[in-house]
Amino acid sequence: MLKILGRATSSNVQKVAWLCEELNIAYERTDIGGPFGGNREAEYLALNPNGIVPTIDDDGFVLWESNTIVRYLAEKHGKGTEFWPEDLQARASASRWMDWALSILAPRHVPVFAGLIRTAEADRDYDKIAAARDLWSTANAVLESWLADHEFLSGDTFSIGDIAVSPFTYRWFTLDIEREDFPNLKRWHETICARPAFKKHIIDIGLS
Amino acid sequence: MLQLKGRINSSNVMKALWVLEEIGLDYEREDVGGAFGKNHEAPYLGLNPNGRIPTIIDGDLVLWESNSIVRYLAATHSAGNLWPTDPVARARCDMWMDWQLTELVHGMVPVFHGLIRKTAEERDMDAIAAARDDWAGKWRILDDHLSRSTYIGGDSFTIADIPIAPLAYRWYELPIEREDFTHLKRWYDLICARPAFQKHCMTGLS
Image (cartoon, rainbow over all chains, first blue to last red):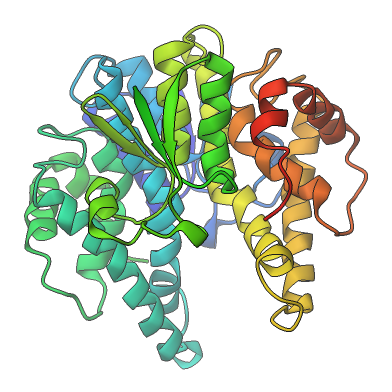
């Protein structure tokens, strides 16, 4: 059976668990990272030299990088579905948002999320958090403008492009921060929130 | 004809130029970004709302994010060669491409910008040294991988090599301390022998 190594509270683990739920892929998950530790130990580093989560073991095939895992599982279990269409242009459009989540969105959200959720109140640098929030907002403004013309990120249907971005949008709408009025982002986010698999693996886990 | 927008001294544009050369596809290129500007003007933002480069236009498809451009061009023009059709082989490539975005590039940016795009007075040498150490730690991970693999994706040259090699060029060309990463160097020498890499990526630092 597919093994997922990584704690349920990691946004990167959440992408993988969410896709498995959407595609009815059976898996076993082991808590690693954060308060559970284990990710800097030799046994884990031999699987993933970066020491971060998630890593999967699919009957002996070891893979890390969450978006790569999502692409691989979609290719194996969801090829030709709306999640991972055969058409290479549709794929490229979804893939671009996955890369964008890695290159722009996730790094901009980290100082805000880590600052407010994983830092004790006495240790928080609110000026830095506010500046990071402003930068994160510019990424959300890009989503807002895109979603004004698109139902989902890669077009008319839900795809793995949406999976790579949504865990961060959930944090945007849930953290105790100032938020600009992004009506299209809100509309898209509410559509995503209505998916039972998203509720189970992201909303019900909350922020920690 | 395929259109590519972006200045040639961007490592992200180099990825697109290099893959286009490898697959032998004709294209037109327009200088955008850096000293050429235009990337924050409305016509370009209409194509790419991030205002970054590169962007390609291929028929109805407007595509940005350099690694997605590499994947798309290889999938449409080099399936079974640069772009493995086997899902496991392709996932191995995807993993290192994503690693370039999530890990490798973050050490490079402060070192490259600090030494090449800033004046001597603007440079924070302590920050550059710390970033170099972080960057070296990433190369160490790749060096270990390359002790077991001829190319990054496996036995042959693939899309996995393309996002990483322009950064390796910077690692070997910048005036910095370098650890002796023998497997990385062996792989880098293989890459440097490719005419398309020489033409588009071994073009100096600016």
